[in-house]
Every structure is written in C-alpha cells, then in structure tokens.
Image 1 (cartoon, rainbow, N blue to C red):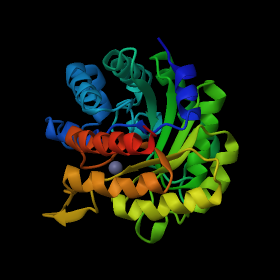
Image 2: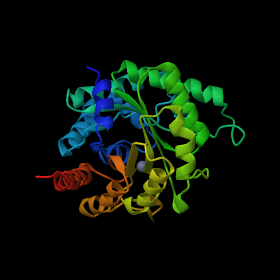
Image 3: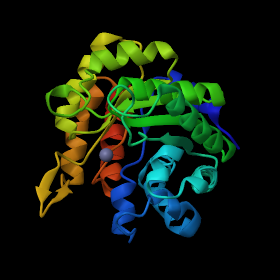
Image 4: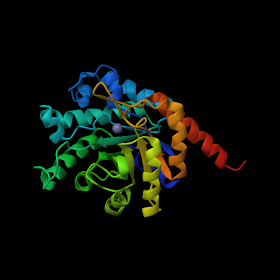
Length: 301
Ligand SMILES: [Zn+2]
C-alpha cells in the first residue's frame, strides 16, 4: 500500500529520516558484471535486489531507493536495453515495495540521463522531460511513495526530471545534486544556486548526494540551509573521498568514522540522511546509531 501521506506527515514532523546506502557498488560486489546496467537485475536477479533492500532496512533505513538510477530510456538506450524501460522501472518499485512492507518508505530513484542537454550536448529539454516522465509513471505504477531525483549535476537536467515527474504523477519529489571539489557540481552549480532554482518548483526535500565525503558535505548543507531555512535537507554522501587505485575509484571511510562526521551534517540541518557510493549496510547501521543517540540526547527526560 502506498504511504505517500505518511511520508509527508513524517517530513513535516521535523524528525530525522534515515535513508539507505550505495546500490551500484553493492551490486558490483554481489557479482553484477561490469557494463551490465544494474536495472537489468530487477528482472534477472530480483532476489538479490530484495536482499540488498532488506539488508539496509535491517540496518535502520526508513526510506529506500529503488534500483532504477540509470532507468531512463535515454540511459538504458546507451546499453541497448531501451525496450526494457517500463518493465525494469515497474519491477524496481515493486521489489522495493515488497522489501519495505508497511514500515518503510519507497523512493523511486531517477538518476541523470548520461547525456548533456543542449547547448552542451544533443539532448533537448523536451526529450529529457519526456524520458523522465515515462520513468516516473513506471515507478509510480510499481508502488513508489515518492520520486527521488538524484546525483544531478546540471540544473537544467534536474529541472527536466522534476518537470517530467510532475507532469506524469502526483507523487512528492525529492531532489539531490552531486557537489564536487569547491562545493560546485561538475556543471558549476552552487548549493545556493540549486536551492534557489529548484525549491520553488515544489519539492518535498532537496540536498546533496554522492560527490564528496561527509566532511565536505557539511559545508554544502550549511550553505543550503542559509539560502532558505524552510528546506528539508537531504545528505547522502559517499563513504569518504574517492581515491584512485589501479584505475578504479575506491571509497573506504569506515562506518564509525563516517557516522561521526554525519553528526556535523545533522547539526548543519540535514533531515534525510544516508550514504552513497562505497557505503554498506554497516555504514547505515552506524549512522542510525548516532541519529538515535542524538534524538535521545535532545529529548527532555
Ligand atoms: Zn554515489
């Protein structure tokens, strides 16, 4: 059963909501061959997707993201599986819903298309809106409580995804961007710029994910909070700064250390809190522990 109303009430309550951790790096660890779109596993290895969701829920996640980050027709087309678009997105939401049961919220994950919008690339704004709308419909049909546009680097693409999701469904929309060194996205968007451009579109929450580790993310969250105090802020950083090892990006901040740094994000005003690339259910378990300890300390006896 859809829990959209409960989700909105929960966000309005001011309480912290614990999200999940990495999907891509966890599925690679579970044997996903390099070059295979993770979304294919919604159809081919559904039990592995459910097991990953359950591991995060067991660790303390209260909202989980569907395995559909690269599920837009544009992105799937690059891997030769555009024909599976509706099917993989519906399955993504259905599997998450199945794992979530009645206690946990399901966010339909919408990631970047992998193409640059005009004038930097060939993708038109209208085509981007259309592709994101199609993905949003399928995620809604599969039972998502909300849609979470994530890891965006371009404001135009974030707007296209939000507009597409709005046209196609009436689900609440969350949006997080990936900020890099210097506090800007790869396309030069600042935390303030993101809030000013995107919050007025009617988001349920906005913030940062991926990009940097939790220490760097504190500054991003502070800047967003300073831009507009009413924003419900998301923080979902990578497990530390990526290091290049044998040509591969490695994230290796241990769970306890990550959780400690996340206290800074909470103090800066983050309300939806999870982790991204390189993190595991152990990271979420450690984060959940510090969130609970902090809530207890703030409640008068
Ligand atoms: Zn990430």
